[in-house]
Image (cartoon, rainbow, N blue to C red):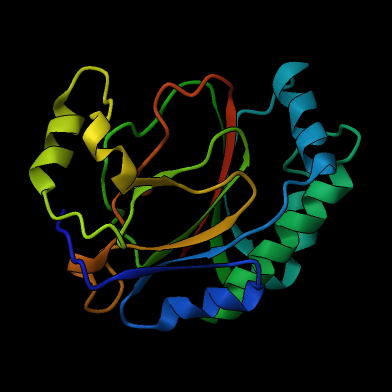
Length: 213
Ligand SMILES: [Fe+2]
């Protein structure tokens, strides 16, 4: 894990902003979206009313995204809004990176999964928190350059960020679409986004990721 202060985050309500990920020094592109009440209500039902749904891990053909995901999720009211949104995001990710297939993961998380700050060993991962708190990441614009502090946080019992460093940590909002470059993006080893799952989140989360396959 290294810090490269020349990298930047591109964030906008314009979906086209996601293409900024192709810029050499952009390591994080965010499409900011308003939370969807329909999708939130749908997910709330199967998280809180109980269902057999635990997680999804599938390779999805981009051309058949909607048909492929339809049966992977439980039937509760509002499901159509969720399926429509997720298939759109899959198609967009496939189109952006010219992929025929993508790796879909969707997890309901009741306790923190990756509490340590880390980088992903992938070219680029799409992360969308459909429910609950979003991913935390180290802000590039802060010009933070003390990797030892990150190490200390990771090694601490509660993973709390000391007050004086709190401003260096940003959080991706619920329902925003984020593209995070990892270490396998061409010549990007030192430019991967340092991030973690939010610690001490009080409500369950539902997180969806898309990867190259
Ligand atoms: Fe990660």
